[in-house]
Each structure stands twice: as structure tokens, then as C-alpha cells.
Amino acid sequence: MRRFEYHEPASLAEASELLLCLGEGAFVFAGGTDLLVEIRERLRRVHHIVNIKRIPGLDELMISAEGGIWFGALVTAGRIERSSEIARLYPNLHDAVRNLGSIQVRNRATVVGNICRASPSADTIPPLVADSAEIEIFGPGGTRRTALAEFFTGPGRTTLSRGEIATGIRVPPPAEGSGRVYLKHGRRKAMELATVGVAVSLNRSRGTCSDISIALGAVGPTVLRAPKAEAMLRGAVLSPEMISAAANQAMAECTPISNVRSSADYRRAMVGVLTRRAVTRALEATA
Amino acid sequence: MKQPIEMYINGEARSVTVDPYRSLLDTLRGEVGLTGTKKGCDVGDCGACTVIVDGRPLNACLMLAVEAGGCRVETVEGLQASPDQLHVLQDAFMRHGAAQCGFCTPGILMMAKSLLENNANPSDDEIRFGLSGNICRCTGYTKIFDAIRSAARQLQETPA
Ligand code: FES
Ligand code: FES
Image (cartoon, rainbow over all chains, first blue to last red; front, side):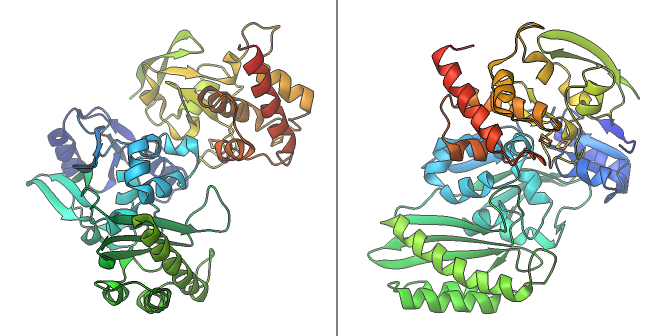
């Protein structure tokens, strides 16, 4: 492996200062499942690794029906996967992490790391965006919080500036009568990147869909919402015809590209199929 | 700068001095001299390097040795209780012909051990799901699954 210097700061302040002084070639290291691969495949010039694993408090995972979820930057995909409370209250997030890499990878990979890598096809992002999650960021100017939907600026790019470290994710508690689904489409069942991923979270009250959010993965430079499709369903009594029409609208709202995994046309078609299925299943889950 | 670390490998304390960019896999095979753990891809895709660290299976190629300081590391060499006594899984792999070139075998044995520790009687789907991070280029997996099922049965009758 290419050589790098290794640092183990004991606090966020120390880590942030290190990242600031070491400059361009310094990277935060948590699970390492992406960073070490990028170093070996020479995709990134890494001179310094700032391991944040010794910083206390970042491995916290809290989950309750009243408080929602909080998980710190060191919480692995495996820990989220093994939480029976998350499986029950947030089946969308559970399904997303269960499909990420292998068991071995999930025992190392952190969800916050998966998010910060800002891949448009990252499985963990659509369900969290659909559930209005917030990301907490520590930096030289103190702590800030931002809606996860506004955190991404392009493929591999986020609003994190030098010296800033994402410290955790907060997900609001699930509303009474809500349903949430994440569907991933790939060529095989395991060890696969999403060709398309669709997350739908909705609330039902007195027979109508009182709120809905649809998040689309791998069909744009970042995970996208489908606001027009959502507007067609919000406040309505959902029928199969309406759901189909909204799914067609979501196809029009996404901006897929063609690459080795799939053509743009195929991705768009799958957005239609998966959105229809995800809305239907999320609705069933509210019953 | 090289750093001294102490790991508990297969129950034995081992001290080594390693560069921080050295993976746990290279350290086990190099400095420690345990070459049972294999390097297939070195990027987390194949599972040949699977070891169990503090009770959890992971890819030794994706962990830095310096991170394993103070950890309990289990490798394929630790499966056997004694040199002339095979682990139930190893025995089942031999009886079922679950290895051809054998390069994937150490990783699969460790993954299977972890799987059976968490689920004594896995269904076929659970075995497939559990092994989805272990690639075998030779066997087509059928014999591997047969061996794991048979080891599971045996372990239930006479726990190791
Ligand atoms: S060598 Fe580690 S996963 Fe292939
Ligand atoms: S036996 Fe050859 S790779 Fe599995």
C-alpha cells in the first residue's frame, strides 16, 4: 500500500485542527472501506490519515419511537443492521444497510462514511433523505446541522469544507400512521451497487396521504427528490391510477446517465416501476 | 513511523512493530507469519482474507494493523483445537469436497464459523446471505453449502 502518515486525534477539535494544518492530502478515516480501496487503486492522493476512532462519543446509537434515531460517525452499517428497533421502526434504512457490500464490509463501513462519500448510488442516502434526516457537522466555527437533502453538491461532493467532520445523523421519529420503504434494483442480490434505488416515506391520516417524500438514487448527480410526483399524491386518497401517474412523473423528474451498469433509458424505466411499487408498499405499511 | 502493537491472535499475545499503512492482512501473513489467511483482491471484494476480530468477521485487507492493537484476532490457524484434530467445519469441507484450489477456503471457513455461532441452524438462504462476501471461482458453491449444512447438524448434536 502507498505510504501515509497516521494520526489518532483524541478530540474533534484536535481532528479538525489536524485536517486544517495538514491540508489537501489529509483525509478522515473511520471504517476505511472506501478510503483504503481508493489508496490502493490510486484514486486519491492520500498523505495523511486522520483516524477518528479514538474520539469519545462518536460510536453512539440511540433509537426510540419517540426520539427517532441518532447515530454517530463511527456507527457501522452492521450495527444498524442488527438493531431490531431500527428494523421495526425504519425498515427502509434497515433494508438499505442490509444490501450494502458484504457482512465483512458492513462490520467496518460506517453509515456516515457512506453518506460523506456522496455517491449518487449510495444505498443509505435515499431512505434518510426521504425521512428528512439531518447531518451534524463539527468544524472550526463550531457545530452546524443541515438537512441531508441539502448536504450534497454533486457526485462525491458535499458542503463539508476543510477542517469539518460529519459527526452524526439525526432522523425524526416516525409519525403515527406512517410507512417507509426502500427498494434497490441491481443485477445481482449481493455485493452490488444500486442501478436505481427508490425510497418512499409517507403518512396517512383519515384515508388520505397527508405527506409523502420520494427520494431517487443513482439517477442524478446526487440523490434527488421528486417534488412534482410528491405533489400529485400529497393530500389525496391514493388510487392505483394516481400512483402510476405519479410514478410516470418521477421518471420525468430524474436525470439519469448511461454507464457500465445501465443505460439512462433503463434507469428511467426502473424509476417508474420502483416508485409505483414503493408507494404502494409504503401505503400498505400504514394499514 | 513504525508503531508497536500487541494483538491476541488465536488466543496468544503477539507483539509486532508495523508501519501505519500496513494492513492487518499483510501483517498477519508477513510479520506474524500466519499465511493461512489469503490475499485475493486486497480491496474487500473476495472475502479470502476474512478473519474474526473481537467476535466479528471482517476483511483483513481493509483494516490497518495499527487499528487491531489490543484486539482478539481469530484466523484459520486457530480453528483446530490441536494439530491432529480438525474443526468440525474443516472435516465437513474435506468430506464434501468443498475445496478445489482452496484459495477461498480459509476465508469461507472463518465466515462459516461466525455464521454458525450466530445461527446454529441456518436455512439455505441464510447460508447464501452469510457467504455473499466470499467469492469462490472453482466450486460453484454447492459443495460448500452442503459442508456447512452438515457441520451445522454435527455441531448441534455434539457442540464443539
Ligand atoms: S483480499 Fe480482502 S477481500 Fe479480497
Ligand atoms: S476452491 Fe478455488 S476459489 Fe474456492
